Length: 293
Image (cartoon, rainbow, N blue to C red; front, side):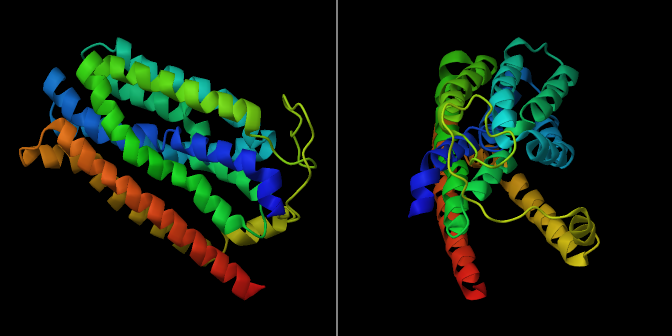
């Protein structure tokens, strides 16, 4: 338990960050907003969903950039800068004109401003703190997305019912800032011995991870390995199918004569399956690591 004793606070901050990132807040609230936007603006459902597609497709560009920035400057630097930017970008929706062009532009801005809140930022730090219990720690970290999937749809409905969909996005941004920034500032630190670990740090932390960085030749060999690309393509296809289902779920339920609030509550149950999936996956990872050792 020494890893959890030393890295527990960083792990908790990673869970909060993953739950408040763009892959959680914007993604799991999208189907709620699609229904409200179509009703308010008179746009077709397909036109509104293009905005969400822009965010998802932009991740193909922003994720590698974020990964490079995390490697160079450290996950703490990236998270502390990106959280306020993402919160501010969500507020853009509160001041949109009634055109699809500005709507799409807002999604593009959100995609780039919030890129530093993607799971790679949070899991990078977990990998630095944990070796023996890495699978369990990663599962706990990514449970944040499941918690968001459970709570965010219902929360978004309550905001929309009181403030309207534009101001609801503003309050979502404020929520992200209030919850994620303090936990990241005070607890999201990297172990001593890793570069950039002293940024705004108050006390040094013990070095945990003993795994070395890959050399340039090893990275080159990795990218030339067909198994690497097979995994990447598989993840892409799965993500496309899951994204299409999640972003369309609430409008489809409303087509079955459900109210927005009822549909959001049903969509929230999906978060429980995400949490269960994280736990199951971490157990498989831990079992496989034990077999290898």
